[in-house]
Image (cartoon, rainbow, N blue to C red; front, side, top):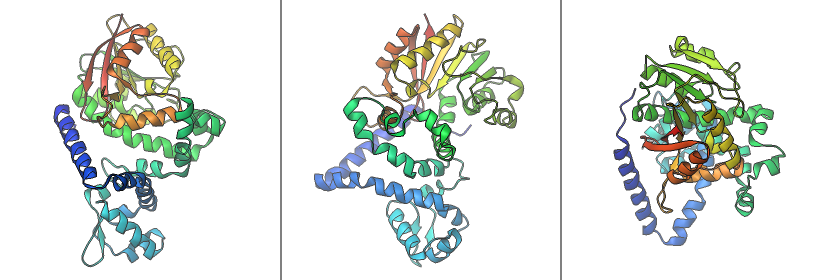
Length: 361
């Protein structure tokens, strides 16, 4: 497991960065500071173009002039130079005195093979379908309802299934984000106390594999409706945990598999409106043992309105796509109480997610 700073240190660093950003904006006249925020979407498109073209991959062996980069990626030399010039002004790539461009640490993270690659999330953020979804945010703000089902004619999950090309872009982008959370969760929470951990709707088992590697005496059950087709068996074998892990093809609203003394739901509850979220939690309540633990891995919003937090942006994304939401600790306590659980504690991690620990009552 990579060495991670304590969550308290990360929170202090986040506060320091937020303060620096606030002071930086205050140095500019307010209209210009607002203009800079409004134009941020254009930088997103520049990152998207660089990621789709694979420019970072071309520079992994050293700096190259724009003409050579353009030739390698099949693009216009002058346009590539202009693209790199913009991104270099934001610390993504760096121009040398000879005009050649090189990787910076941020640009290196655009490589698909980087150990913490952000390439796929950069592609998702700039994808035309994603942009079209966000263009309907105002509809959600006016109505308080998800706007995607209205302008797509179907729900978000159905849309991803019926449009597999974009579905792959979405899943890979979400995978980028999810991968950054796995090690912080494992570092913050001790899973060795459990005999059997059920990862409910856990995809191909990325988090569960990490849990079983951390807890060599623990067994796992991976429950997911796509478990027979998403490569889970091969992945778990590759991670060396297949012998201690069963798989179960169960859906979100099906009867929950029994046999676990811990049930992990990572980014599940936040995807659904209140009634469906309660139904999922009540189904888990019906399956969990009296002494078991429910572990929700979610972004827990701060109580204050001014404090920066990644979950505040994701909250709007959930609102317009699926009608879900991020919650504060007190909102989770209320939701869990109505589903038959008591919130025990919220364990912060070195990432933007926390582990919400609850017990059945």
